Length: 411
Ligand code: SF4
Ligand code: SF4
Image 1 (cartoon, rainbow, N blue to C red):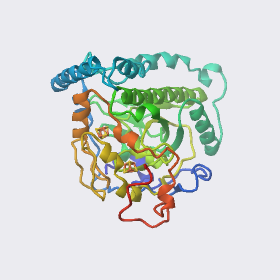
Image 2 (image 1 turned 45 degrees about the vertical axis):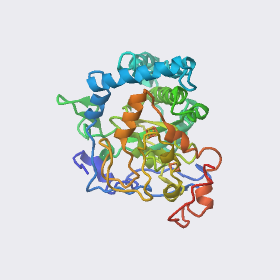
Image 3 (image 1 turned 120 degrees about the vertical axis):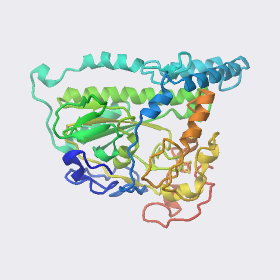
Image 4 (image 1 turned 135 degrees about the horizontal axis):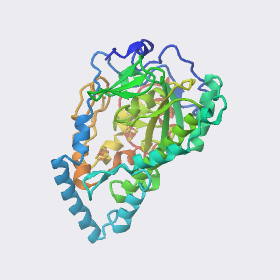
């Protein structure tokens, strides 16, 4: 792993394990009995082969300047209009209208009519930032309290502001994308001439917000109705994210919202105990299943951190495979065991997971002009059966079965 990120790396000797030098909050009562707090994430990571991705390739693929993407969108648009004219369920005019209405305020998707990103969210962000009245403007001292008090307050605020769940972890420089570095010499985030983004070391606390996607519509994926759920999930997450940013600023502390392309959300969410990696190569929450959206805020507000969790998912996914069977692009692994070998061009080396073939996923979703999410809907752990891995003896401390029956959890 890259260790040129200054003093912060000293706290992260062992990737996936709890960093040293931080306060941890009491995990009792955070989850039901079948979710155990542990001292390292349940996904194996290999520091010697860890890869920090250059995301420019992804941005180029999605960007409006990409002729190939434009041509694909043209075909997808025709397909979509055919469905609409044929009144095909999930593709009707009202379904399409619901999809686009679901990202009214913080639109950040691909608009098939301009073949580019919808970026209304930047205007909204500028507007909402005018609502902040930090303590120095008010002439009062900033909020002060212990790390535990700060975490309890921020968590309660996060739920009030629209998150389904809030977790806290530390800014491990190794998890950042290739163009982002932690720099102990600076006080404010800055971008270098060669395009690198430097993050001050003082922003070492990470607030992770998890927002559940509306499930009734998500189960209709892949369709325009499923996309309405997907977009609603992002929009709700976006609102909670903006609001939390304002809250932290309002307390008198620094806050930075950096998109997932720069700060990959999943490693931080794993460390903050919001879920485990599932077969679909996405985070699965013990409370909400796969259909959640994540976002992070960096801050210098001292917080008591959370610990990773184990609810038996690694053993359970070996036999379940429901997400892989639901994938219309055959992009998810049907192998019994996770692997160190990446599959698609966007996969990151250095972790042992059920890698998905993200090229296949992107080809399918692009050709259909759908965000899909059938895998997220399939992993419906949220429907009151979440403790089945534990009850089968696959949970924390239980026996790890080699071949788990498919039926039951999703039956
Ligand atoms: S979102 Fe991608 S990986 Fe998931 S089911 Fe759809 S095509 Fe498959
Ligand atoms: S659907 Fe089944 S195999 Fe896929 S991530 Fe969820 S529990 Fe694991």
